[in-house]
Length: 136
Image 1 (tube, rainbow, N blue to C red):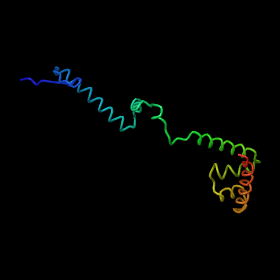
Image 2 (cartoon, rainbow, N blue to C red):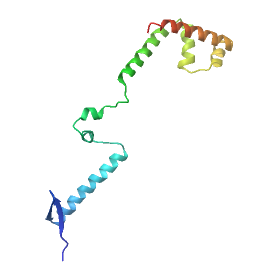
Image 3 (cartoon, helix red, strand yellow):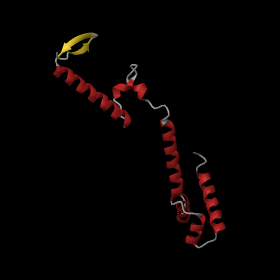
């Protein structure tokens, strides 16, 4: 006796041929495999975010503060403007210490001055920048 193959369609058991049954389950297995693979790779369909009809609100990242990012960028730009107003020696000192991340001892050796002299110059330049940025 040959095996009978059935699929459930709208809750009803429907007799199908072996080829239809195998094709259906082949596609079902492919879908399951792709879903598992997508989950492992953190890939999701946009429709998976539309579970309650509020697609855009479900995509919104509440931990991402656009205002804070814009404010930070404005502050950085203001600091760059202030640094551009410094004389070349002061700019070089700030660039070496804060952008190139050189140590105070490295800067002292490069400028051929003492370690405390670099600290004193740095503090003067930072105070000058602070005064320039008071209005911001």
